[in-house]
Image (cartoon, rainbow, N blue to C red; front, side):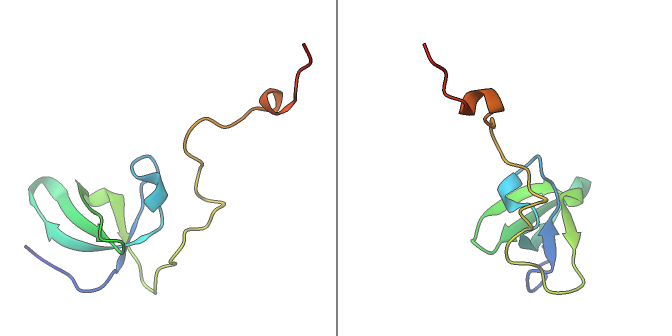
Length: 86
């Protein structure tokens, strides 16, 4: 088990755990087949692929840029927002 101190990685995948995209995480363990266990600042841990995290050179942003995060779930269309008369 190779444990690195501090949150020197960020979550890179948007499709899996989109609310954690761009959030700081730390590497807890590195296993076989390029799998890793990462822990986020809120204590949530996940076993995932090594490709899901990126090392940061400076301090990571505490909150991801909202323009880069896609909303999750169905979004209202313009037709849904217009009230229709019966």
